[in-house]
Amino acid sequence: MIVHLIDGTYEIFRHFYGHRRFNKGKDKPFAATVAVLHGVLQMFEEGATHLGVATDHVIESFRNNLWPDYKTGEGIEPALLAQFHPLEEALALMGVVVWPMIDLEADDALASAAHKAAADPGVDKVCIWTPDKDLAQCVSENRIVQVDRKTGTVRDEKAILKKFGVGPKFIPDYLALVGDSADGYPGISGIGKVSAIRLLNQYGPIESFPKNVLGQQHKQALLFKRLATLKTNARLFKNVSQLRWVGPTSGFAKFTTKAGAPRLLDRAKAAAAKIIQPTK
Image (cartoon, rainbow, N blue to C red; front, side, top):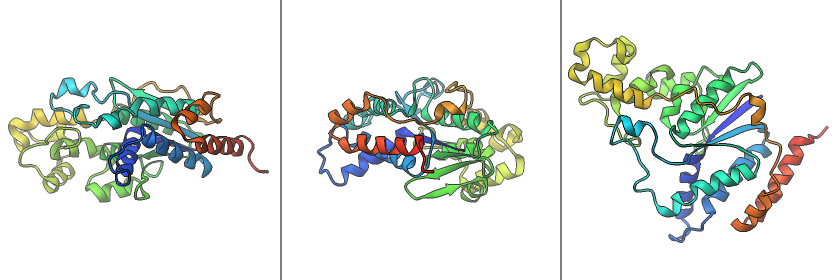
């Protein structure tokens, strides 16, 4: 069994701006949402059976209390933000397990779900569908991998080491040192990618650095590491069997009508029939 975990926030951003290249600024209310749903259905059509989607119900999280400049919803285009909650509703109506996060982030949900699924002996592999570098910390050998849908790249532990210069367990330390502009923390002054890799490979995690290496910035580095470290204990599901897709709910037809996307319903029914009654 392969468990697929999707970064719904990334997907709706990706499709929203993808449509922007063609719609001349005239955003359709459900365009990005419908595109995400088609993408999920494609995965079912290609054989996926167990799947969950994590979303940021709100952008702010507990990390904003730790670092005032951490990312917020400020600046997100209203037309994009207006599709966040409809996406969550539509996924649920399509029968897909969705985790709308409030105090935690979608990344925390993905990390927690991957941790839980990988602990199940019945699971052969966990695929986390996002290019977000934060999630690289979850990769474990070839059992938990990161998939970039846009490029088709699959990264196992060796690929993470090749890309970042450090293994998955040091990704929070690496991000703490070099910073993450997308999340709103700057990293440590005077530390670049090359020096971060050298220090981590020489000393191990930031906690093991000699005090003189970072000097007065040591405490701040530990704070940034806390920001970069994903939670793996969010209670999302009791067992992996709850992630099995069994088709759309009765309310999905109403949504597809409202969204002007009748093909979604046809695809969902056909995909469900294939999964529930596989060809003998």
